[in-house]
Length: 590
Image 1 (tube, helix red, strand yellow):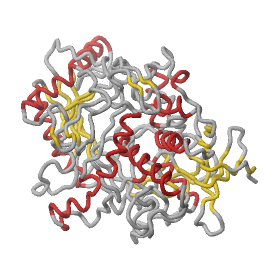
Image 2 (cartoon, rainbow, N blue to C red):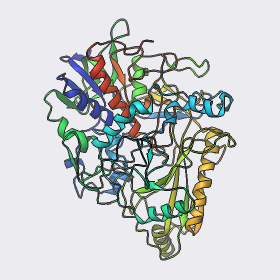
Image 3 (tube, rainbow, N blue to C red):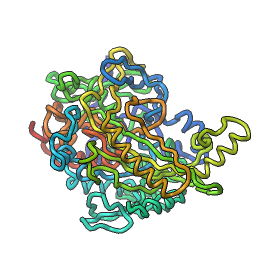
Image 4 (cartoon, one colour):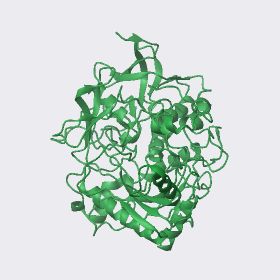
């Protein structure tokens, strides 16, 4: 029997980026806000203190900031005919844990969506015809436009002190920025990071081929900056310890660094770590959330009453909570009916390595999470897809996140595995190899989805989330096209070329890291028959429940998701304040 606590106005499940944004924006309403985070308390001054934090063995190798997969994980299979097995070692994606979530250990690449990304189905139908879209694809438009989200992208970039160079301000194309980007209302808060040597080499070759490179927009501050919450970030020192680490320089944006110092001063806000939410409770009608049930640090089951529930956990965890709570109809791939778990998507990545001439000194230890240069000529619909026959595209870039001695030191291709030859090979590879990455879109399909596993359970006895996912030919064709462009740039740079292309017909393999950019499962849309939440991320079924994060994406774009996740969170919370709090109920009529 759960112990009932005193009610609060708003309970937030998960305290990563969306949880921190929601709490901060709603705190001025005077409502009592409680955030429940299942992981440990983590803060910049303690968890990321120097020199303890730059421990590659603890953080990169052993995943100190990551979820304990022995207690809770997902199960994975390629098709509904297969039996899913648990994901017990972090490989393809890295599930964060603790205050800040993945926003604490991320790299900091912060992108806006293209205008066409948010109306994908309509855009491709208008340009290429309805027959161009496969019947097996379940892609759909977002129920919100880029123009509506633009102010919220700008708000996020201020909070995260994003460093970059605008390429399109109010439809005026500017030199040095991304000529393909959607129109911005203003320049980035900070100028771009200093260009590392490898980025200069990549950018010069790309420009000579006519692609016009631009600096990657980085939530790694290029200089001192005070955001709208009065929180100050310091300049990045290119230490090379971003991904998998908290930032001891207070340079990489995170919920801890960018929001929590101001939020914790709010007397109506409480954060409880080590509080694992089991389900969202509803009343007898199933149409109103009454709060959540969670397990506290002492292992006691607690019922927390609340007037509003915000699901702000990681994409997969939000979907699982909906399924465990019986909110929304689970998706059925056979009939195509149901919505919860529908439209799971990922990223399709490949790369080209350029081995530069001997005595080249790339100095890879000088790096940051988003220190790099990109082109978007192969991304989105920035090229004619008609003759190519596929949907989507990929961002192509050189990024140097660092040169850490364990994980980022490798031997040359076919180099020896031990002895003097191994040492020489590592040294050669370390200074001379310049990687060019392609990160591509993944469409949503009828046969890729999330559900509850009938066999495996977590430490609390609840069913694990089951992922049914594999690659499709559309994505193989897309990444081939992008890698052709990356190879062209590699050849222009000069040196030996090694192409690492995901081959057509191969299966999704969980062993090697790809990205933590998992999306879908609680998608947003304009009607309850095809989506879980409406344009304000409000549940169609339970009006006082809001679901935030990349779970709302109907399909995945060619960019890292955080910028769009944050913009949608700001958009949602703004409308909660302006509309829902004044008149609780459905904000969009079904």
